[in-house]
Image (tube, rainbow, N blue to C red; front, top):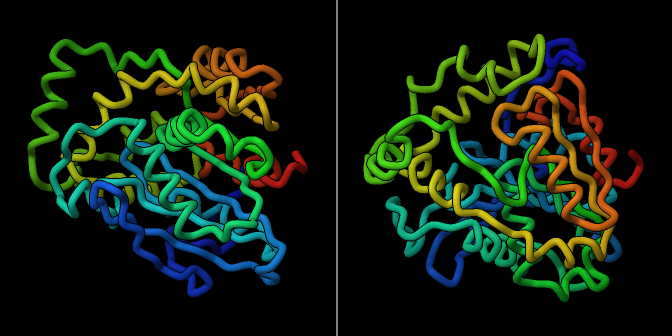
Length: 296
């Protein structure tokens, strides 16, 4: 993997090319969206990128900066993450689900993407599940508008958590606990999410981003992920080119789950990356960019 420091890249430094927008959902959640308009807005496709659990839109920075100016790029903070709220603009979760995240993605597309713009969807981890939920609820979008889909480090069902006794009860408690994850997020713990020899700058970037996540979001979405099952959306996803990417060192959404996801979607292409972990937007941004553009 290219070194971040070798390229002079400073993690999560905002760029003026992305305009901030606030998208209000049907249940009153205020989602922070970031849009980079293309050089020719009249004919451009739009890449919409959905991030993972305990992260935020910045986790896609390395991919977003590699996408050409000929395409529109939309990133956003999922509800309860980053600068986005839960329903009714609140900081407290209520009955959160992956299906609701799929509805949020629909709201982002409706407000941030022109009607005639073809769609390219990318989702990492929980963001991939959001894309699957969107497909399940909006099959007509896959009859011509959606051009291709990237599902990286994610699963269509079958998540079981860490298997620690009392895990579910602890997460329910955290869902009611104010504050941020902060010092609970360590570099040592973050290293387990990566493959071999991760770049120290990338480790610190993702650690800092996760540390800003609220304890409530951490706890609330754990249960949502454990209940996630979008196998019914597989037939819709099969209408377009889908690439599933998984690393052999992924401890959260394992190679087994990635392989099962690809098998569930007829015609999906599976990319198994030796030695790569769960944080693929940080570890292999060039590959993910190529998949989104249809060149890899």
